[in-house]
Image (cartoon, rainbow, N blue to C red; front, side):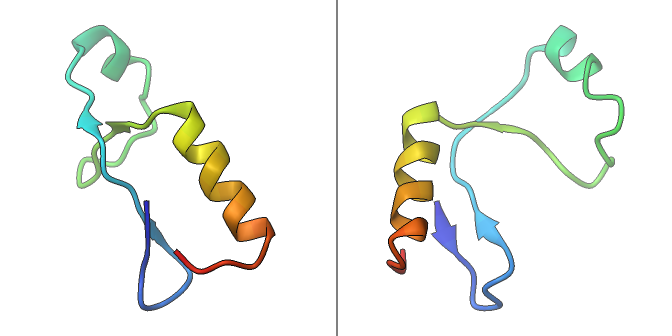
Length: 56
């Protein structure tokens, strides 16, 4: 995960979700966006760093 220059968005790197059944459940997904799979532990680690005031 990476902070952007704007500070309002976070870039997430991960494996693209390509399972058609899983994607079909995301009916609200705009056509110009995609889904990536991110390990839960990475999200928890990032949240802890942000709560501690660290920059990533």
